[in-house]
Length: 289
Image 1 (tube, rainbow, N blue to C red):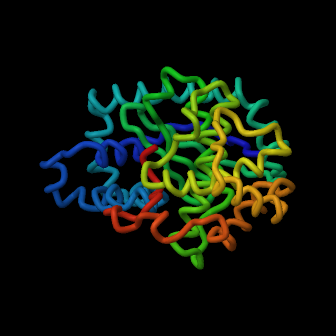
Image 2: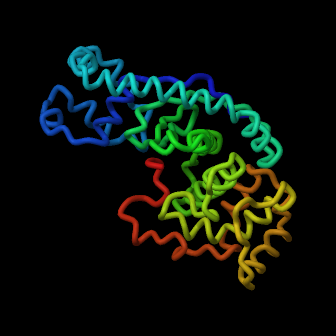
């Protein structure tokens, strides 16, 4: 099971998030703060770099007036309130999450996770591909299922981190399967609206759609798919038959990921499905939910 060790608010992580979301011209031009600006710019793919700032005593001393300012303290205190709300939501929904993790995804692995909460004004969702999540979202204030859904999304990335040998296509397949499992199916089972399986990164929409015959097959022995109208067309039926012949319905989620990484082309996914040319950055990049 995914075990949340702690929901915490780290002032440095919060400050980095503010820097990433807002432009502070004077701050950016000040050479004293070049290190934190560099960390902020790389935070999406290297979130653990925030620890290097805390190890820099000179920089921490220079940051002290900012961290103690009234404006920052207001953002920090709001984050503390939000942290308590998220922790309560997780506690309320944890039994349902545990049942889904164990009996639907078929996972048994224990994973301890530290959740770094930031202010919900700065929509953030990323992870260090190990055991830390960095999260907040304004939608969590009005949808009890939203926060825990996306914490589980990031937690699954920690459980199934990107491997060096994966191609970009393989990472996008893994990411899209996590979106199907959490952003859509889990959220629906928690009472949220998955809008007929349209939740997730825009640039992964074609990938999720192509994986749906396989996903419907995967859930066919696990309570069925929630909130999705299965299309009546020959291509969908063909790919469902392939999935059934590959015994997808009897796989757990880890087995499903490994199967898809090797066999995704069998389900009609081609380079055009991934639509790389239209993306100015790497598709399915880890940030901004």
